[in-house]
Amino acid sequence: MGSVLGKLSNPENIYFQRDKRMKIAVLKSLTLFAVVLAIAGTSADARPHYYVGWESRQLITSGTYAGLAEPNYNRLTFLFGHFYDDNPNSNHFHSVGRYTYSGPRTAPVVVDTSGNNRLPEIFARVNEPFIPLLPGSGIWAGKYVSGLADGEYARLTIATVGTLNGGDVGAQTLFNKSPHYAGSLDGSTVALELLEISPGLNVADESGNPLFGSGNLAVLGSGNLWQYTPVFWADLSVGQDVPLTAKFRLVDLNGVREPSGYFYYDFQTVVPEPASLSVLAAGLTGLAALRRRSRA
Image (cartoon, rainbow, N blue to C red; front, side, top):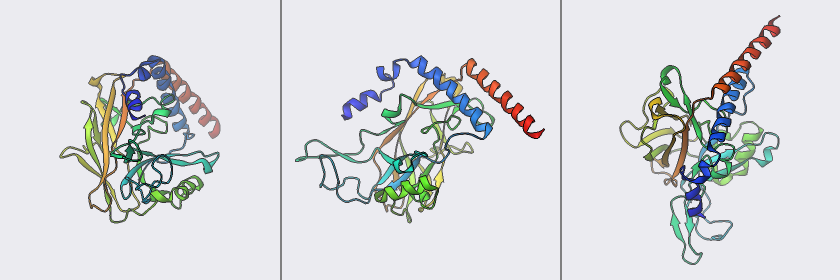
């Protein structure tokens, strides 16, 4: 399974090349439409989807290796939260890049990642084939930058599982359903460790300051309640429709929890189609008309 997923996750594989132009054109149109909705105040769920917890189970509870020692025990775990506002009981986490076993149950080998170790997740790439980097403005002028598109995987804010406790119904439901990830992070200082990155791809904070200018560790937060939004960017000279990848793991600088497995973010530079700009202009014109009528 791992080898198959590895092949699928290669941006040069036929999985990504098939109907590539159509997928990119559709994404460009949807991205601009999402901007219209956001300006109108009707954008989709804006809560964080990326979370940090740690695995408190000491034994594997299901599958081929049920009953064996949990190789991810006491390790930081990167999680993706799936929310269903029409049915909060369906809310759930997917762990991303956690430690796992491979091989036969009688002679298992510990692996420092899992089959689900890429973002967007492989199963979701029909709708979100990559995380888009769009042309920015202001301090991001002249750059492709993350955080400008809608979509589950495009909003890159990372939060602790603890921030879900006491939230809305969906957040609280997700927190309650995953107690083995909900242990306190008090005493821990969580950092991203950069393992590999495509030439031309950079990571900064929201003010534009490099996260990895003096090393390969960037602090996300300390304690049980924090959130942080990394910004990924590339110069416009990189060109459009270019795949870019970054590989990370989570580490606890205080040594309270062990490091997570490794995982990847997969990006692509995107320039909206002219037709999409027309959609945006039409949406903004309609919004202005609605506002004029509401003030009349």
